[in-house]
Length: 174
Image 1 (cartoon, rainbow, N blue to C red):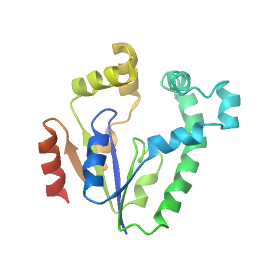
Image 2 (cartoon, one colour):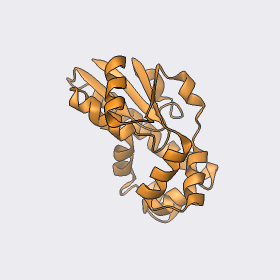
Image 3 (cartoon, rainbow, N blue to C red):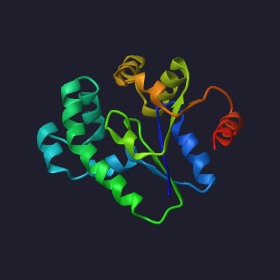
């Protein structure tokens, strides 16, 4: 089984890369979506944050790194086990996509890691639009990400042009 990790900065275009890889026959798993499922009905998280509302929790964790670490201490082990279970299935090639592959220590699970990036202003605009955030709120989220991991990836995909160019870049990497 070919195991690819896909990560990158928030609103850099991981979803676009996922769609292209899925078209090419890869089983694509988005850890952000899976983590949302793990958040639902999680009593420990509910007791700690007094809610399971993702918007409220996001506001807390993007403002307080200790709260972010608490949330990750619960979610990351669940995601790790989920990934291992997916690796037991009969896929020829799989892509696990997640913003925090390096921070969670998942990077060692993959044959290769792709890092998707886009210019800061592009990501800021996309994030404000996608999440209906003020510029200040969006900047806080962008700044909460550790971008040092870009240089650790096997391949860097610069998503700063057209969708056709993005697909050509991926084709050349594959």
